[in-house]
Picture 1: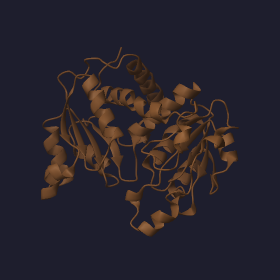
Picture 2: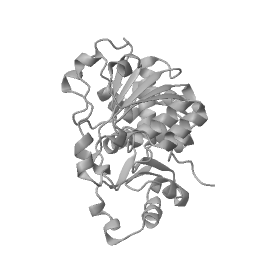
Picture 3: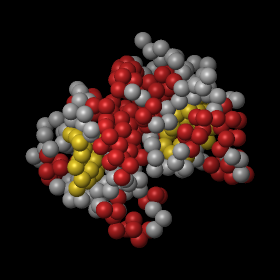
Picture 4: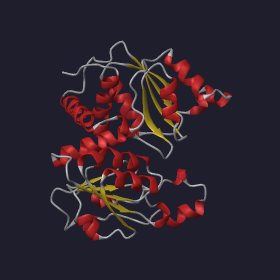
Length: 305
């Protein structure tokens, strides 16, 4: 029987999401537990990462697990032409679970199909980033005390933003209303609008980052324009600083509004926003440790008291 993996946020039902949020809350209260003692976790980062890699490593260390892997493909046999399948099969000999980031869309799904141990997708190209979505949903629940019937304004790179694509799917269980704010070059792909239509999820599209889209929101989810996804740098230059959130733009927003960002930021949130109590992106990043602890324990069938 194939082991459980987390490749796509669609692998989780509404009940799964709620259950894992409850587990993450337990870890937030007490993150240091010997639950991965005797376990080896493989971390395969074929693409650069700071927050995701470090939060997974912190999560593993706080659970007393061991880590093997690489954060730079230059130190792996991929530089010698080794196939992804062979890399996965080799590492599965050493590790009880594999955490993988890869530049190719669909790579994590393929890895989960050939691996005898669970795979966690830490980002596959512009496709999906399910543990980012889980920590985002955890942060939303923490700040709103509910996941149901919220208005979520998502701003920036909606075309290539894998965190955005996963978030739409993850929140679709909870009757959200989305405001999609993006320039024409970065608008939400058609397949995600079709997904919303099929699920009865309400959404509105804007090219203007207006106060209306901020003031109607419970969550303002900012994203950076990702230079690494562009093949034409002239196109990137046209849109890279198109939207910037300034502190004064939050003055008439709802009292419960929280600003999230999957980070890293470039210029899409002014630094003067950091001191606003509605800014929650650094706490959001911190929640990555607790959520990733919860996901790993779930996939390894480890009970958390």
